[in-house]
Amino acid sequence: MDDGDLARYDRARICIDFGTALSKASICLDPTMPIEVGVKPLPIGGIARAEHPLLVPSVLYVDAGRMYFGPAALEQARRGVESNRDPLISFKTVLGATNVDEALQTKLRPSMDPTGTFRQRDALVLYIAFLDQLIREAIDLAPNVPNIVANAKRRYTSPVWRPGSGADKTYERIFNEAAAISQRLGKLFLDPAGISIAQLKDALDRAAAQPGNGLLETGIFEPHAAAATALAFTSAPTRFVLVFDMGAGTVDMAAFEFDESTEPPALSELKEARQCSALAGDEIDRILVELYMRKRGGEKSREDELKLLRTAILSARDLKRELFTTGKCSLKTGWMATTIRINELMEDQNFRTYLNALRQTVAASLARVLDRAEQVNADFVDIVIAGGGARLPFMVDLIKSAGTLRPSPVQLRIGPLSPANPLYTGVDASLRDIFPQISMSVGGALVEMMPAAAPAR
Ligand SMILES: Nc1ncnc2c1ncn2[C@@H]1O[C@H](COP(=O)(O)OP(=O)(O)OP(=O)(O)O)[C@@H](O)[C@H]1O
Ligand SMILES: [Mg+2]
Image 1 (cartoon, rainbow, N blue to C red):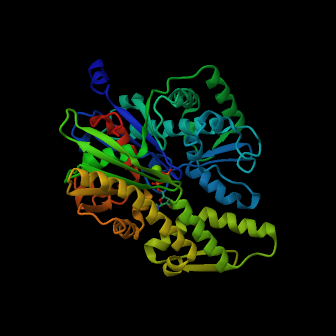
Image 2: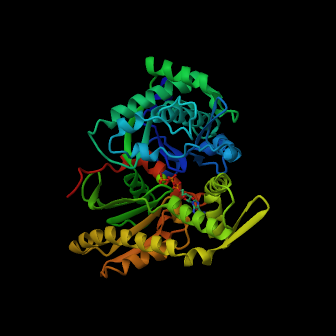
Image 3: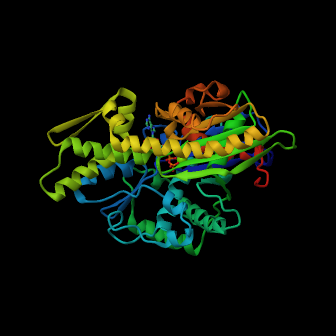
């Protein structure tokens, strides 16, 4: 690779989205390239041997002197149901904490790390090092991505947006330490047999003393990233976009006004529409687990009851997917199989309460956007559904019914951020089902193409 090649890709950047459930990564080779060739999701799930080539379970698991990462951690957690152990599933509460530094310094709970070795910060550093190895390997194997871009600048999507909060310095140090560890331990991160705690601790100490170059450029507000994707791939541009991103941990809503009269065009946020709520995928899982436990009936001992609950919790995401795809799901524990049908969930009181609360939340953001759209006589507001929640078959109707709570001459166009929606014909059709989930990492990688104006209003 000569200097010409280096210069050619000096605007490349990689955006990581550490979701509560799943991590994703995308690369933008050059923001001036046509979008279909310039931006690509990276197959980090394929490298990690995960279920989906573009998704890596955001999980760590500590057991018997070793730490496991991603799919291997999930596998170990399933085997570990007997030993009263929990995987570390979410970084989101840490990343979204009001005091990030304090949250990072807390130790992992003993049910996650009985050795008491790791703080949240250590877990995050190690997880980023793991992702860094997946990214490097994915780039190495990708036929149409030059190897040089493995050293492209890094971005991460963030559920909070606090410019000037100092958090970027914290993350910069974290990425720098992760880079040193990724370099030291290399492909050991790709081994399903995990890495010994002693080796990890040693690497953490050395990285703290001598950090590497994590190449961190910036954090990107998640809904902003999704809106950038929506606008970049739309075949019917509109002035107002309300992004509804339902992941596992949170539902994030944010609305944007796109102004093409300036050069470059500006994407400014209607801040009063912004909301973050916990009424997301994990909440549906909890309702489903509760329904399952009621239907199955309990166990005699408290210990067996807890074991059963742990099994149900670890299976919940798969059960939910099966339930919404086939109309029923079944979980076998011991000799007993318990089946739940979709109408049982739809009629469950907890689930109905959940749906009502979600409808009210959507309506609150929507009302703010409609106020503004009516002021300027806009014809349409696009409501773009991102995240795994886009797969829920009732979602479009739920948002539609939230719209009826605030009658308006402005029309709503509601649909997933995917080629399943006629507004997004530019997206590779093979990514149809997965696109809403990867769209935050895609948008985070390309977002400079549509710089954000200073926050409006
Ligand atoms: N086919 C499906 N049917 C129902 N739910 C699904 C389906 N596929 C994924 N999900 C749910 O989507 C959620 C994962 O979506 P996503 O990857 O957007 O979340 P995340 O980014 O990890 O979470 P967050 O953004 O809250 O941090 C999980 O709750 C998962 O169970
Ligand atoms: Mg997400």
